[in-house]
Amino acid sequence: MKRLLKTFAVVLLSFDWLYADEKPNIVLIIADDLGYGDIRLHGGVAQTPNIDRLAKEGVELQRYYTYPLCSPARAAILTGQMPRRFGITTALQARDPGLPAALPTLPRSLQSAGYQTMLVGKWHLGFASPPLQSGFDHFYGFLGPEIDYFKHTSRVGQVDWQRNGATIHEEGYSTFLLEEEAIRLLESRDTQRPFYMQVAFNAPHFPFAVPDEYSEKYGQLDKSSAIRAGMIEALDVAIGNILVVLDQENLRQNTLVLFLSDNGADQSGRNAPFRNAKGSVYEGGIHVPCIMRWPNELKADSVSPQVMSAQDWYPTLAGVAGIELSREQNMDGRNLWPALRSGGRIDRGPLLIAGTHSALFDGAWKFIQFSNGTMSLFHLDEDLSESTDLVSEQLEMVQYLKFELNERQKIFPALPTRSPTQRMRK
Image (cartoon, rainbow, N blue to C red; front, top):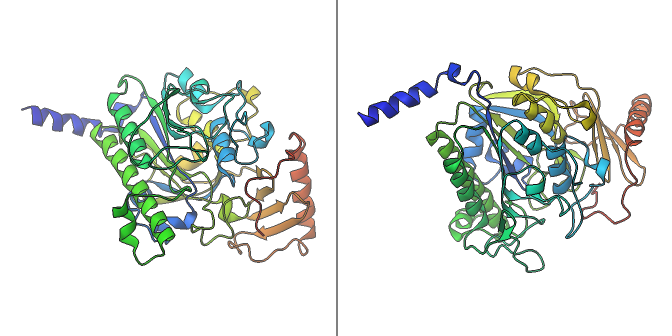
């Protein structure tokens, strides 16, 4: 009898009308330094069946742009602003202040709407406003740029592993510890309230490490490449286990799951078919995988032509949650949910990705201005690999886009004098 009742309840949960007035849950999964071509869906060598299945069950964004390094990318997601507005242009170092303390954030807005907010994994946004002061109810993970996957220590050998501000000492591979925490939080959540969970894995970021049973599967590769491929497969396994628990908790139908990478892969990874790598505003540094799944709202096995950036997530997810944002928040991002939901495209006008170097997109045109003042121009519809620079041929387009870029850059403070962690590779 109990089994029949449970089956009946699961069937009822599949009906859309049960969620008509219920706020959706949001799970944002972030990979670290995962290139566009690193997943099997895009020709990668690592086995990624769960990420590939997400795309089959949801929508893949054809043109999703992030920032070329992890701190600006994460700042853009949380604030809806270009991070150069508040001086974050490169990977933050130890004790950099980072995210301004009083800045409105996505988790703060969701908190005000009754959401439970949880960050599991990497922060890397400085110490002025750590996760619990930036809108998260719960934080488990690490504050700095990277950790040893088994020892959970920073590059100077100090343990950087905590739960809600208290350092903890645990054994285990970090990818699987983050998975276990995410599952524990899903199973122990307040079922009467919606939740926002950000699972920010550190894989496959340096330093490369993975349990032997994963790297041994890729014996045809050199040792470093085999370890990295194993790290990506372990990441995929962890994501798959989280998705299983969403199903077990009857959360699939009313949960928007997002998967993306913070920036492109470094030189050890695969960004094909794009040019260059992490640290660059060529496509290989900022054009990354991005997948959305929400059975109630999004068409399965589809692609979206909408041009979207990291700074669009705050207004877009606020729109999904029914939150009206104030104009005083100076959003650079836009609420693109209507286009994502319909499968259409909004003409958003020029899109700027501004860091140490800047890339301005206008339709298929991409204009790059490097920190030394040199410029490049590409037409992405005809030249996705950015092999043909048109800057000397399309003088009117260059003049127009340079003017648009200069107008937008007037709001920015001067670039820091410190050399960026990653330099542009031309």
